[in-house]
Image (cartoon, rainbow over all chains, first blue to last red):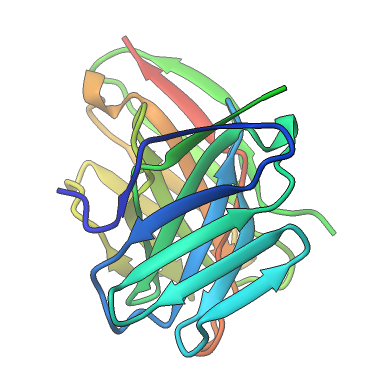
Length: 109
Length: 114
């Protein structure tokens, strides 16, 4: 089964904030990543957080990390229709990435 | 600065055939990883190449093999194709540093096995 867990679907209205959640299992992961995948495309790196941080902000994106609970979240402020995509969280194990199944974000006007 | 490139973009094969997919890493990157993404799933790690050697391997059969060339580009070969090999194959490159292993992905090759 999947070691990285994500909710499968999130629907928001344009202008609202979106929060996508993820739980991971390997407490020794050094970095945790968020990737975005639009239909028919590859994976675009959105942001990452080092394991000794608990928050990272990058323009409209805020990543929160709770190492105790192995919980990672991605908040997108002022969500736009162009943010509609599948979002994957991933943890690093032995230099390789382990992904969740992805969360489909649907932004309606 | 070109990012990760992959070829071909799409491919249709029949069961039992063999396929070769190609990847050129981002400039300055020397490590290449391959992932398989089945429909509706997250990418699954196949293997990773560094210094022309397979450094790590995921849970994939020996039908999946690869190669890395001196210029760091890489190939993924799949023999005796099965219907279940239909997927998006993603290549990712990264610099080989202990402290930053961020992987950048190419657009993928979509393989359909009939």
